[in-house]
Image (cartoon, rainbow, N blue to C red):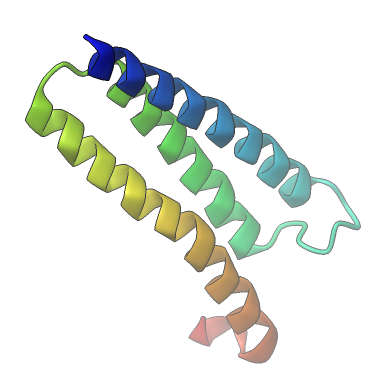
Length: 101
């Protein structure tokens, strides 16, 4: 029972963190003069935060051990994508033509 409660609290913490990240990424993507307005990197961060929020909701309600492990692996992949893809998109976009990114 304790592991289930701990898992649910962790999923809710991840949900809150992903929603905060979504708010920050949307602000950066939509607000003029932030330096990343309308860029691909900011859009990828927005989409990654939405995906993490959905996965966190699923993790909070799932009961099977295998499904829980699969969702945790997907969350880890999503977290890696949140950190690496915007960096690759924004740095590549500044150094290379748009068609090569």
